Amino acid sequence: MHVGRPNIGDREAFIGYVNDIFNRRWLSNNGPLVQEFEKRIAGYLGVKHCVAMCNGTLALEIAIRALDLKGEVIVPSYTFIATAHALQWQEITPVFADIDPVTHHLDPDAVRRMVTPHTTGIIGVHLWGRAAPVKALQALADEHGLQLLFDAAHAFGCSYQGKKIGHFGRCEVLSFHATKFFNTFEGGAVVTNDDELAKKMRLMQNFGFAGNDNVIYPGTNGKMTEISAAMGLVNLESLDAFMEANRRNHALYSELLNAIDGLAVLPYNEREENNYQYVVLEVSDWFPTPRDEIIRILQAENVLARKYFWPGCHKMYPYRAYYPHAGMLLSNTTMVADRVIVLPTGMTIEEGHIRTIAGIFELLAHCSASKQPRLSRTAVA
Ligand SMILES: *Cc1c(COP(=O)(O)O)cnc(C)c1O
Image 1 (tube, protein in one colour):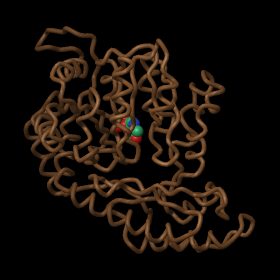
Image 2 (cartoon, rainbow, N blue to C red):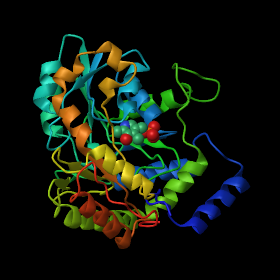
Image 3 (cartoon, rainbow, N blue to C red):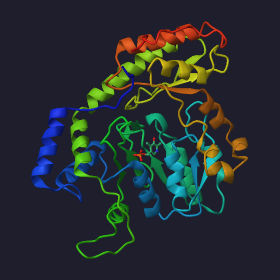
């Protein structure tokens, strides 16, 4: 059995929606399910506008273009590559700023150091679903006349100072990819309280059509399908169950792994709403088994443990060629990328799995790299 799989809500309800879609023969182009989905998401977050999209990356590209970003935009390097690519794809230069080693978020002082006369914006990332330093980044953006938006791909259902993620910056971009807390197979959205911006993004996502036969903008195709909206409507009904499973898993992982010397599970702020989707384990460099070896062992046991965002966007193509010395400015990024393991969670993970995984770490804590324990292939299977 593989440990770590997407969350899926009520299958029967989904199949009911699929039959409705076939009966209507309305498969895409702002169908009734997409319209309902957008209303439900906007209502859940309390924002004025939700523009549903085919995926999070295209949603980011459209948001970036709708905000007229040009020149240079400051982003973290410790993020999914799409944050940087969404800029590069439209010939805007992503400039990487370092993170805070404790929170893994953009460090506002590091951002300030990267501002140049070419800078037009900042993309904050609510990494792991924990909010980026919204206030400090907004103050910096205001001070330098920069646009601020957020890549909120991890943060659906999470809050910052008691207010749902979705309200901050000019707009926030969500991803509903299969691996995210809440999925629509593939999908995404931009949410905003800005009427003009929402209108512009709606034009852009549908080829610039302002009505039949009337194109008023050079747009693209960012539309969500009815099937994806159906999956979203079904999964919305199970959000609380997904969240509760993740919360329980995160609490048990934390209890068991934090008791082992050299391991620390990144905590969530319990005063906020969290989706607990990421169990982020930091392995100290003095832990007896190196991080990569731990991952190899866990994967051999069919546990889908992974490095994440390693080695940082700045070391990937094409950015590593543009900024061969970027690493000198990104020491915290390198340090964090080298010690993180993300452990599997979600509805398919049970208490027994977590206890077995913790048992493997117990063994690894007591042997040197050259003397790995022999684990049976059936330990988790
Ligand atoms: C998943 C993800 C994206 C891209 O979303 P897709 O829906 O997969 O295109 C962007 N940024 C971050 C931080 C992500 O984790």
